[in-house]
Amino acid sequence: MHKLAKKFGKVAVLFGGKSAEREVSLKGGAAVLAALLRQGVDAHKFDPAERPLHELEGFDRAFNALHGRYGEDGTIQGALELMNIPYTGSGVMASSLGMDKWRTKLLWRVLNIKTPDFEVVEAQSDFAAIEQKLGLPLFVKPANEGSSIGITKVKQNGGLEAAYLLASKADPLVIAEKFIGGGEYTVGILEDVNDGSVALPIVRIVPKNEFYDYEAKYLRNDTEYLCPCGLSAEKETQIQQEALQAFHAVGCRGWGRVDFLMDEKGNHYFLEVNTSPGMTDHSLVPMAAKAAGISFDELVMKILEFTLEPNRVG
Image 1 (cartoon, rainbow, N blue to C red):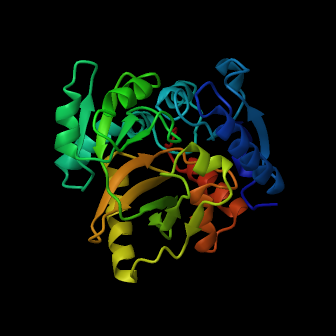
Image 2: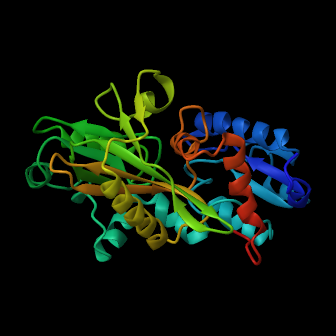
């Protein structure tokens, strides 16, 4: 039994939910619940899609393993704060901002944090002009969606409009983003109650698909994850420090993940911040934590331990 198990009290593990990422959340949340139970925590499954939120009354804290809308966008965070239930991860503002790729990129630009060039795409947009400005290939994505849902890689002239229509089914705010082709990477962030924020070892992602899409993330077994990532120690340290800056610029806390791309010249560009990363057997933060010598159970307990901080509702 973990030394803090009793101190946590009765813990609701929030997973499932109503978003397009429900299945991923169910799988990761089950893993979190099992880890907490192994450590002696009085943990219980709570699926907001199946139970009204007022039934959270009586719980001492919540481990948020929800993804996407209503779980990662500040909605559940606000409800938990109104109920005075401490919870894992970022607060209302950071969760809402982190979910919005467009507004995150606007903030990062102001702070000179490099992010790929982008344009907002609307039904009345000049699609050909955007294709010409950003170049081909380019990516089109819903601004407020996760797990690569609704994303298209546009490779031919005239393809942007169809990609926009697909993305707009997931979210009315759609962005087109310049293609950066030197590799996909991610930096896990874990906040320690004693040591502050720590950037975990960088993971390089090598999908066999066209890009790191939903299938590559959750369904295929041939996606390669490299940790060590192959960057020089100096470059990795630099990116880790900048990832922490990008994470805190959004107001994030507790734990999370910052994704970035490299170009062929070795320049890096931050893509987005994830305030409630996946916790499945394919997930990146547990993988990076393992490389740092932190087991899955230890990772889960460290994330939950942050809810014990004084005056921390979220």
